Length: 333
Ligand code: P6P
Image 1 (cartoon, rainbow, N blue to C red):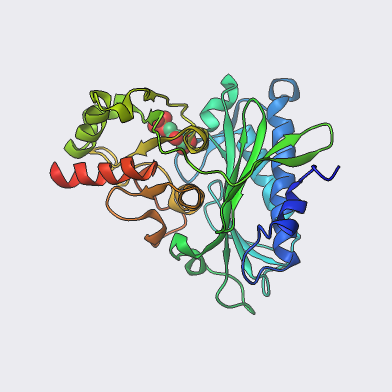
Image 2 (cartoon, rainbow, N blue to C red):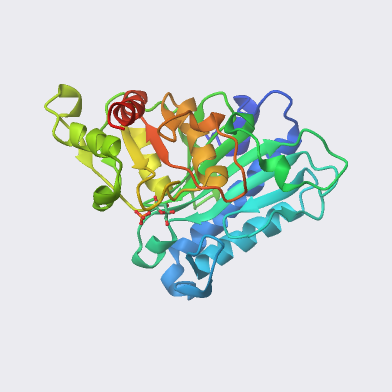
């Protein structure tokens, strides 16, 4: 049994925590993992549990909310609401921040999440996921405000995701490397299967919605075409992969190497993806695994959000390709 490295045992034995962390952090992370286990079960049985389809409303993003979005969102809020160390929550599915009951005054953590990323793929059985980010408040003794969330991504103390695919995986970092766990349903535990993930320096996948190419900036087009038409050895095995679920595309690139782009373009000057609960957490994970993430012009983790639902362009994956993108933007104004 000594080989059975669960999430909790890994945190304790590999200090996958962070300076100043206490048991509170472990409890918080385990609650997020618990939510992932429950969502995993709902997703696995979606067609049988009558949880497919639309919830009959749009969210603040203007996107049609799926019933599983609501289930995942409500579950995460319920689980975190009882934790005295969590002061407030920012969710893709909630217009405003959610001040928690137990930790509203003295909770030291702020949690941001996209409860179910890739919702449009739920009904067609394509991989979806949950993305989370944990920040520490600079002061307690009062209710959290939106301003408490508006800090650079470099101030995250932990970030990660669950991805509900052929298996359910839980991947996270606290700034000391990245570990990946696979859910063993027979024991209900996330077991360490991918210790110390490092992104391979060989971009196996070029990932982006190339049907938007007509709206892309000249630099984006030059970046894409340069790789697509390259005869360089580096791109000999590079293929196009685009799931339509951000966390699935980023997870695949993390394990195989690659670059994902959701850029700004003439129709969407800020791109589509949200910084607080999509781009900052994934940038933290990918940087910790040896990759990079920018908005095409500056490091993603240096960007300070101006609102809970701020959108930013995202270029994320192998360092060389992320840098090449910025170079192409600069050379093709
Ligand atoms: P498009 C899913 O709705 C999502 O927010 C991300 O998970 C995904 O990468 C992106 O949208 C896909 O957007 O415009 O290519 O369908």
